[in-house]
View 1 (cartoon, rainbow, N blue to C red):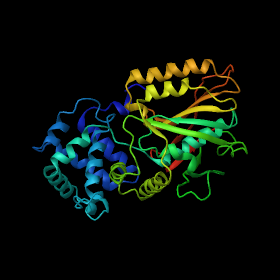
View 2: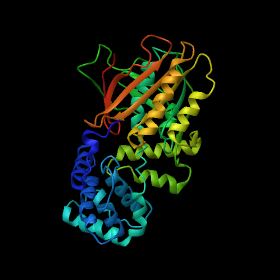
View 3: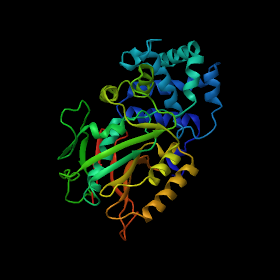
View 4: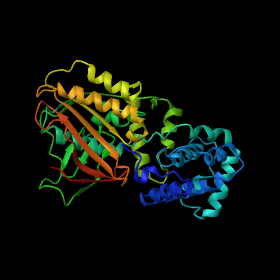
Length: 366
């Protein structure tokens, strides 16, 4: 993925304006006001303000504003300071008042908030798994419908548990009926779609035999403080998303997702090198994480897939399912590739575009 278009916004105010507008347009106007307040934080005589002012890199691609909103939300969730709660609930909407409040919080909690700028937000959003599942259902009609899955950049493993979620995808339902995680995006059919309005229903043989994931620093959802940190990155004025993260925490406490602490490139290469059971499709998936990886890591994963794909057979297929951001348009696109020893192996198919947090999916189908 090249740093072109929207994701290449480096100038601070332009990035801040874009991120605030994006939050507002996606159902989080209160968070948008907090984001706009960071302009005043940047001018403050605090370590946090100075670091923001001296930021090196692509401000928007680094999600720098969202690093700060995570830290500020964390103050409320942990009970350290609840003054922003009235902003998140919409009781305070005056931007000047919010600017002053956020600056006061940064001055008071400067040393607490500063480390939140060290790494990108852990944007583990269960709603995105709707696109991944739609891609798997589409694949199940083209390769073997028994899947061995592995996820890159799994964070806390929220989407590594997608086999435990119940999905309603247009006219298609899949997953355990009793699941506390109910994923039902608004299903839109694109003008470019074929006569199929939603993914094909799962065949009787559709199975997720195994699923695991990696992250450089995976989050343990069974640990209260870790779970609160992940929850901090969810916009507090988005109640559906907050409910989904609570459901994910419940499921993780019942049975933790299978996660390892490992670089995504090394993990993908290791997974591809494992012996593959006959009659099973090995598939990698990831969502809104590719942009955070070094180009060298991206290239290593692509090369590993091309090599492994050359050895794929109808009895041991290989697939790659990705929901990632087009850097030029900021569309979140579901692309699927598969290898099964055929002439069309490795071709990428754009199946849908989706809301950043899974509120809707626009299905193209093929």
